Image 1 (tube, rainbow, N blue to C red):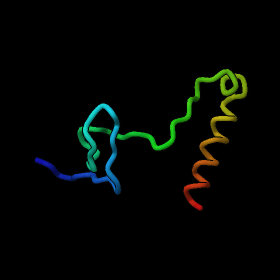
Image 2 (cartoon, rainbow, N blue to C red):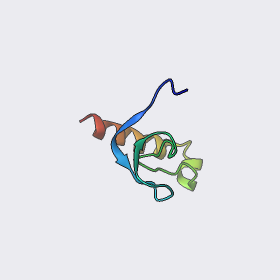
Image 3 (cartoon, one colour):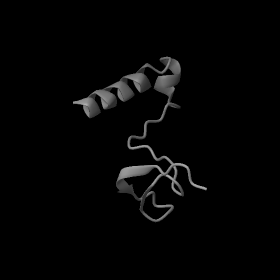
Length: 62
């Protein structure tokens, strides 16, 4: 029995599955991919990673 159905605003094509507007069967896919496991992030306590995702969030808010 389905109790809730999560629908995306726009269809997503993951390349692994057919395009769909539903979360089910495709899962959550990031719009922005940022790798934490880099030498710069590991030696800088993740400062570059945090800076990049804060810039992306600020751009989405604007």
